Image 1: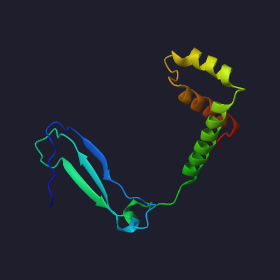
Image 2: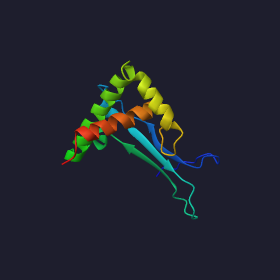
Image 3: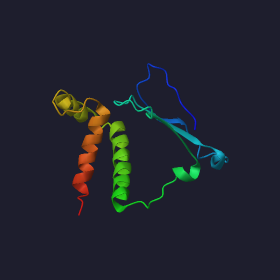
Length: 131
């Protein structure tokens, strides 16, 4: 079994060190290397892990649920609405004024993009109530 030693300054590692290029014709031959490391509260030496996964273990094993499909459709629709509204001169001045008015509130959005996502998301939710 291999052993990984991290530098003392590293407290946590989590994520892919290498990824599979799914568009490559050699994707089936590539491996993904995932690493996790944490500073254990116990004296256990088993606080580091390395995983190697092939393409077949990266692909989804369960079917897409209807809730996931609804969320994907909502995300695509809201993203398109945000892109259109961002470039529209019709809403530019009113959006900027409304953004500045809510920006300093406790639950206000701090960026214009986040504000547009909230506005367009609320508008989508109002037009498409979940049954």
